[in-house]
Image (cartoon, rainbow, N blue to C red; front, side, top):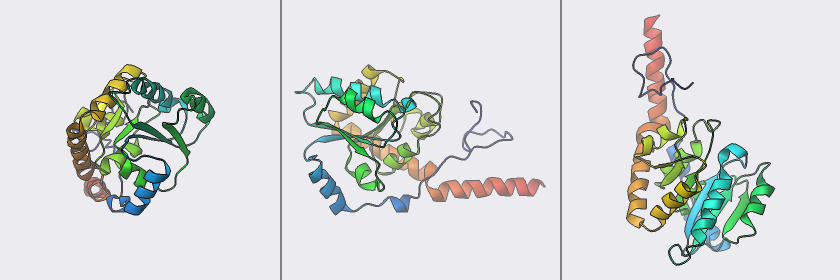
Length: 228
């Protein structure tokens, strides 16, 4: 799969990969629900980091937790930072132990409606470490809410999702230091968060909305039909 191209990168080859997409209209959220969650989790006036995904090795959550713990050491610089971890999996207990009962690291388990969490977070992080993370649809979902995203520079579709660093931040996989620096750069710079978030939203609308992807998919099918 390494040499395959997405539809907008294809140069006339026999195989065209169409990316996953999101139904942008379905990603609306209830503002009252957002405020309810913010109150219940004590998130008022806090910078909220969000991870969504299975708690398995290839997701790299341990590196995110370690980066967060390093950030917490710099209290004066990064006061009021919270990490929300949504998802379940075989590594949950190990990751909870790694968090050492840190009240600012909150394991929320499985969540059916993710929209309010995307809406309330300030930064989304997907620190996957292997190509088992083929695409990262949660990146697209977070970007659709104009959230700045941090992900890893591995050989997978995640680089494509964030426009190879133009609509998100790419860091080296398994690097606690790189994750820490990227998160801190966004925490301390609200304008940077807004700028990257705006680019992220634009990229989703141009590349990953259901309307755009399905129209291009239909176009490719018609090309094949016309060649028969």
